[in-house]
Image (tube, rainbow, N blue to C red; front, side):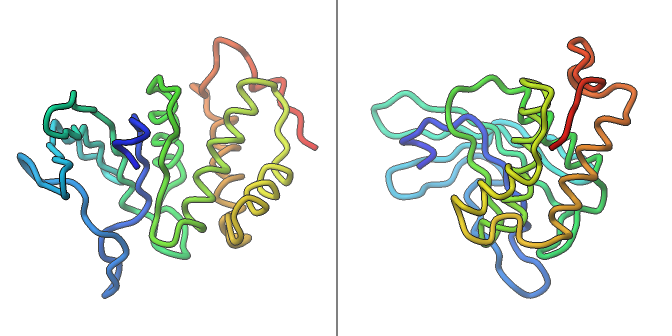
Length: 188
């Protein structure tokens, strides 16, 4: 999928193992390269932060031009829990947004609904705020749940999205300061 769609950004919201359960298979090397069938994955760089890691990875296929993508691996969000800090999740969302792309952004956790849905809801709400100044939280979450059952699974997930969004609004260096959207936000 990453090769076929030439994806520029992957957001991984799970650890490989949580407790005693395997949550995700590792699809990147710690150094150098690894092979998956006819696709080679090469590690370009790694930046480690307190709650997440950013990796630059290159996909290549014999006889074709390689494709580089950025993986944001959020490491402090337990399954069915909340991130250890909302600021880190907001930071990841803003870093994802800073990468110019017209390709799909791949977001995954272990089941693809709880943490994935929460991140996508936050991402969509932040885009609504920037583009229109109007945020419809319930419509956004309802649409996600319509598209995939169990997206944004719990009230706790809802509260994570809202806390992250309101933390951006209350932060003096909130995104979009040049546009001044923070003072124009309306909710339905």
